[in-house]
Length: 120
Image 1 (cartoon, rainbow, N blue to C red):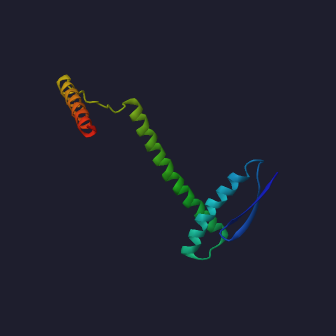
Image 2 (cartoon, rainbow, N blue to C red; image 1 turned 90 degrees about the vertical axis):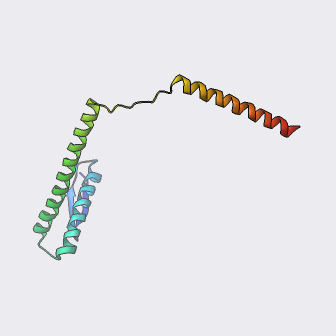
Image 3 (spheres, one colour; image 1 turned 180 degrees about the vertical axis):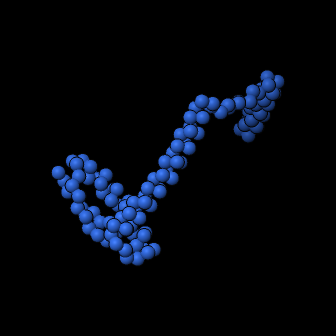
């Protein structure tokens, strides 16, 4: 069983991990260390159990906030799936389409005439 070494709040720890879970343990320890260092910067030295408790509570608060946001996003996604927004594509009236085609033909004709006069 591999042993993972990490630091939390200036203290070294070693912990056994299941094969393949070393990276996850290091990531979790780094998150706890980030919170612990923030607490130490603000409050200074404190007993290790209190530091770990406060850091764990800060992570729990952050996790709770993220869970609330996730639940809200999932509800919104469910609402959108149940009632997809309507997208309306404007329809060009046939008279306007015909007028645009006529304008394009005239522009093409003028371009041809301009080209002929330049090459002559």
